[in-house]
Image (cartoon, rainbow, N blue to C red; front, side, top):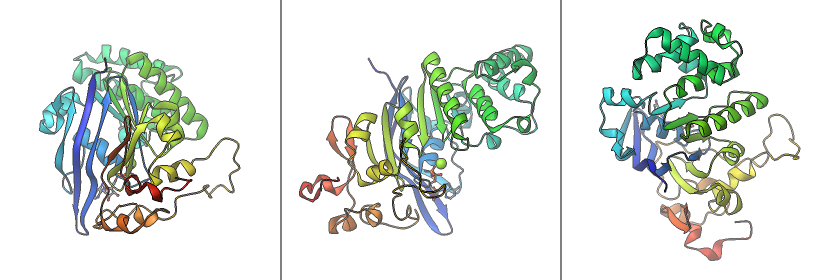
Length: 335
Ligand SMILES: Nc1ncnc2c1ncn2[C@@H]1O[C@H](COP(=O)(O)OP(=O)(O)O)[C@@H](O)[C@H]1O
Ligand SMILES: [Mg+2]
């Protein structure tokens, strides 16, 4: 039987800025079962990072504020925990890795010490034992000559190697959940593939759940069982990977799929992306009465601009937020 590990319900996170209130996360809800991989996708500025930072109480407040919701992890609402309570979970039961390891690694501490730290903090290991375990982990994430590398500083490593250090640091305590926020975006394609296969291997070994945040649906196809699509702070579609690829409902999801480079398709030029969705994500301080995607949607009609669609069930485990569900006659062949 599946065990529910993480359950986010009706989460809203706003940023109170001089320009107004930015609704970065607006009523978001999804879950992860133990050992499962869920992909959280959407363009830049859709609220993916803020959603994931909320889980570990890392939203900068002010200007950020959690306005409503629950984040239940193993049955406990993380939003009820104080700083000390969260510290006990962070790096222990839930770990996080980010796009740019240079911002998360401490530039003035040797990497061995950094990988050893969670073990000293959460497992109460002495320094020598923790460093031994750190060397084992650096070796496990395939850092060559791991033991010698314990004394290296982050700037002495390549981007790919730094990301491996981050992964080792996140894994040493055997977390139940790993949150990876664009873990390979800053890396070139070959290194990206290596890091992804490393993550797949470790996930299987540790039987941990993975919340994988990316704007790359190709990565999701390779890694995830289910997908949550966010647009302008809201979930617009969630489904199994198979449904997202075979039966995408929301025009935004379809747009993301169309903008995916495919093997065998010729890139027109290094900067030109194929079939990019026209327009940009709206500024989140803007009040939008209708569907937030209407301005960019090739299928938008009057209702879409007037009132906001709800997330409705359109198949088993498949939900979407689009008025086309209520107006099937408006669905054309390409949708
Ligand atoms: N520190 C901040 N101050 C003000 N607004 C913020 C801050 N962090 C995030 N936001 C708002 O939240 C939105 C979503 O950000 P983010 O979650 O980082 O997007 P994503 O990860 O999907 O690219 C941003 O577009 C911005 O409006
Ligand atoms: Mg982000």
